[in-house]
Length: 267
Ligand SMILES: NC(=O)c1ccc[n+]([C@@H]2O[C@H](COP(=O)([O-])OP(=O)(O)OC[C@H]3O[C@@H](n4cnc5c(N)ncnc54)[C@H](OP(=O)(O)O)[C@@H]3O)[C@@H](O)[C@H]2O)c1
Image (cartoon, rainbow, N blue to C red):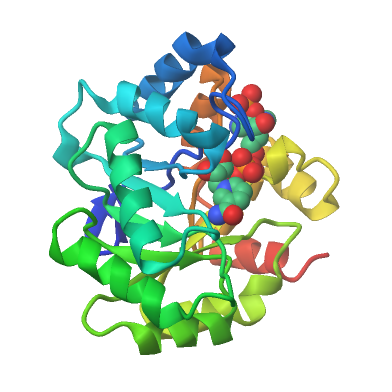
C-alpha cells in the first residue's frame, strides 16, 4: 500500500479489465478463469480494479462483481466509467445504477466520464455526478481522456466534489502526457491513472527499456510498468497468473533517479 488515490490507500498499480468477458459484446467462454484471475490479483495485494459500463456491454462489470463478492468491500477501490453517449443528467444516474447492480456493490470508489462529449454541456454531466456523490453511490468522481482544457472545464463546473483523477493513455511509447497533462495534474493534486501502461505487453522494441531491463535483471514489460509508476497509477490488464506475478515484481524494481532520467531522456 504505497499510493493514495482520491485520498484512499491503494496498491502501487491496479488491474485493468478491458477484454475480460468480451470486448464490444459479451463472450462467456472464459468467465470462470476470468473471475479466478481477478481474485488471484486481489489475493496478492492489488486492490484497485478498473472497469467500465462499455466493456463487453456490461459483462465485464458482472465478472468484476462476482470476483469481488467474497472480499471486504472497504479493502477494495473499484473504478468504473460512464460511456460518452450517456452524459446527460438522467442517463448518468441510470448508467451508474446499472453499473452498481452489475458490480453487486452499493457504491463505486471512483466514477469516471469515459470520454468527453462536446455535445453535452460538461456542467450537466458534472452536476449529475455530484448527485451520485451526495447520495453515496460514488465516493469520488473524475474524468478520462480529457485534455488540459477539458479538465479545466470539468474543474470549473464542479461545485463541491473534486475532480480527483484523469485516466489517460500513458506508457513508454506514449510519453507526450509528460509535457502537459501530467504536470497540470501534479500541480492540481489530480491523480493520473495510466491506461495501456505496458503497451499491450509489447515493450521489446524500445532499446533503452531493453538495456535498462537487462541491468536490473527484469524484462522490458516489467521495466515499462516501473517507468510509468513514477508519475502515475498504472492499471495493466492481465488474466495470466505468471504475468500478474511479473507485474508485482516490477513494482519492486529499485530504479534509481539517474536511471529513471536516462529512460526519460531516451527515445
Ligand atoms: N479510459 C480508457 O479509455 C481506456 C482505454 C484503454 C484501456 N483502459 C483500461 O486500462 C487497462 C489496461 O490497458 P490495456 O488493456 O489496453 O493494455 P495493457 O495493460 O498495456 O496490456 C494488456 C495486455 O498485456 C498483456 N500482459 C499483461 N502482463 C504482461 C506481462 N507481464 N508480460 C507480457 N504481457 C503482459 C495482457 O495479456 P494477459 O492477460 O495474457 O496477461 C494483455 O494482452 C484496460 O484493461 C482498461 O481497464 C482504459
